[in-house]
Length: 401
Ligand code: PMP
Image (cartoon, rainbow, N blue to C red; front, side, top):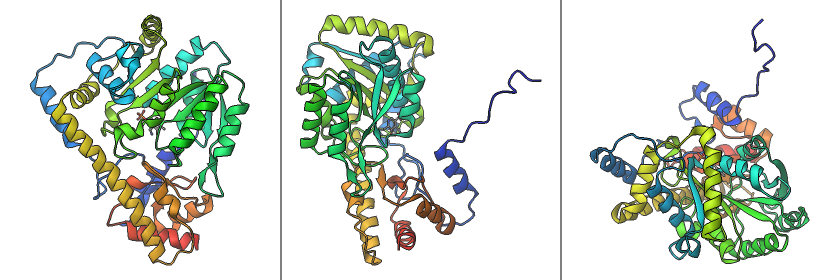
C-alpha cells in the first residue's frame, strides 16, 4: 500500500467551490460575486496604470535578481511603514518599528502568529471577531496559537454588535491578543466609527491586551490611505504597542505578487533591534527571504512622488467605483419595490457587502438566477458592474420577496 493511504480527502475551499460552480454554468449572464479581487466596470481584472509604469521603470533600470535580505527590500519596508504609521509617526522618527517584508497579508499574519507563539509572554490565545476573514482561524491555529472569538456582527441590525464586542474584549483574560481589522472588515464591511475605535482602544488598554491589526485594505476602503489608517494610528496615539499585518494585494492590485509587511511598534530602538533579530531567525527557516518583484513595484510607487500621486488617484478610483456600485444596487432594489431596508449596503465599506441573505436564499440565487457568492450572504461588490447591477437587484428582489 502507498505511504499515504491514510491521508483523508479534505473539504474543498469554499470560494474555489463557488468559482467552479460559476464556470460550469452555461448561462451567459451569470454573475460571480465570490472572489475578493477588484474588477473594472466591464468585469475584468484591473492592473493599475501606476503599477504598469513602476514595472516599466524597474525593467528599464536593469536590476539584478540577487536575493533580498531576510526581511526583504528595505526601500519597500521603509515606505510601507510610512504609509501605515503616517508622516508624523514618532515611532518612525525614533526608529523603533521592527518590520519585515512578508508573503502578502497572509504571510504577515503568519509571521506574526509565529512570533507571538514564540515570544508572547502571556496566554497564547488570540481573539478574532465573529465572523472574520475565513483564513484567520487557520493561520493562527497553524502558528500554534489558541483561537477564541469576540462578538462583532449583529444579525438583527446587520450592523456592529458594539456592546457585545466591548463586553467580550473586557471579559477576555487580562493580557490577551486581540485581532482587529483595521478597516473594511471582511466579510461584513462593517467598521467601528472613530468614536467606537477610541472606546475599543481604551478597553484594550485597561485590560492590558495586545492589539494585532490586520490592515488588508488601506486606501481601498474609503479611497484615502490616511483615513483608513485611523484605527492603527489612534491606538498608537493612545500608547499601545501594536503588531500590524499589511497587504498590497488590494490597494495596489498586486494580488499574485505577494507584497506585504509585518511590523511591531516597539518601546525603544534597542527593543526593535532584539525583535528584528528574532524575526530574522523565524523567517529564515520558513522561506529564507521574500520575492523581490512586487516589493520593487510597491516601493517605486510609494517612493516616487509622481507615481505616488497617480496611485492615490487610482486607489480612489477603485474605492469610488465600489461605493457607486453599492448605491446603484440599493437604488435598483428600491426601484423594484423591495420593502426591505437596504441601507446597510451603502453604510458598509470595502470589497464586500454583507447582504443579510440567508444560506437558502444564497442557494436560490445560484440555482435559479446564476448569481454566485458565499453562503454567508457576502457578495463581492467588485463583481458588480453598471451592466449587471439591474439583473442582480432583480435576482435579490426575487429571492427576498
Ligand atoms: N486579511 C484580510 C481581512 C483579507 O481580506 C485578506 C485578503 N482577502 C488578507 C488578510 C490577506 O490577503 P493577501 O495574503 O492576499 O494579502
